[in-house]
Image (cartoon, rainbow, N blue to C red; front, side, top):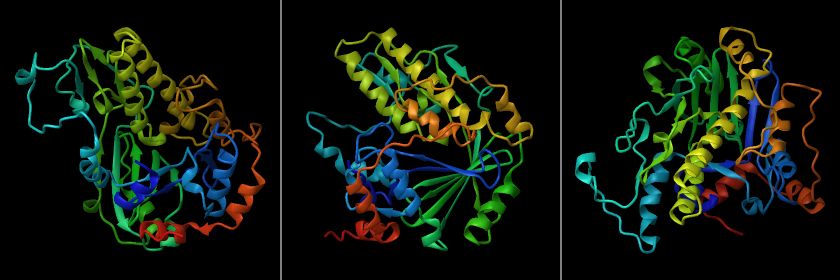
Amino acid sequence: MSNLDIIHHCNGTLKLGIVFDGFNRPGEQFDFPFGLGEPLPYNATSTRRMMKTEKVSENVLNYPDTSTHFRSTELLNYLDTQVHNLKNVTIKRQTAVLEEIENTYDFLIDCTGLNSKFSYIPDNYFDISHIIPNNCALVYRHSYTNRAEQCKPYSIFKAMNYGWVWNIPLGDQLAMGYVHSDKFDVMSEFIQAIKEKLNVDVTEKDIRRVKFSTGRCKIHLKNNVVRVGLASGFIEPIESTGIYLVTSALEKITRYLDGEITENDYNNQVNKNYDDIINFVVAHYKYSKRENEYWNHYKNIPVERYRETEIFPVEAWDYILSGFDSEIKTPSDQMDPTEIIKIQKGMNYIDWLERERNGWYN
């Protein structure tokens, strides 16, 4: 599935990276562009230039490390129309309970979410709420009131008093969500942020509350039953690692089924993946100059700087840490001169997006 498929069928928009607003101090911003470690001309420097100028190169969809924003329900509906393309797979949909399916499978993937209904193991949860206390998001969506100002080719994450608010531009709406610890009452602060962003009237009844837990399993695979997705664990939304952790798990499952790794290898690799990402996520909070009970909590959490992960190369640390420490410089990768010209001559992002959404091709 291509980024263009998602733009066409899943209310998608282009995601070139993330802008962190106010994480160090209110009023300060820093960028986290995609394309880290990619060769010319598709590296993070090119992606960052497009973020800054909001003009996109004619070949932006050829960039291997760009992403999309999308509405998850529409993605699921679209995937449902594509399953017939899978070869040698029979899909049977039915409601199942554990007692009915025992001894009927060779290999079982439990993707039933936080409840993990088909893979219960006693004392198997490693709670990280003492590290990352966020356990709730207040969620709101609204149609654009100023599309040119609100629909960007990147996500904006804005630090708040007791967490942060995502600003995710979809094809027809701006999605906002305040990630926080429910120890703090943030409803009025979130309502004010919505009003400032969208200039609309909003009340508490318009806002949905989503609870979650931060942590991971200790054992993910046992006796050919494996937990994937939320059944395996959840860190928090800040780096949108959920889909990556699913695809990474599927790659490791393939290696396990092919006999390349053992059950123990699988569990160790998945746990290391989670723990490496947790370490990276904490760095987004630890070095902030903000001062209150919420932000000060992270200052006492140890972080191993520049620990490389499967998903975040060493250069990612420079982009994050430079947002908090002026002594650390963002990577100064070269840009292909031809790509500079393509971006300068490129389309305004909003115009490009409308062309692609409507299927107008040169």
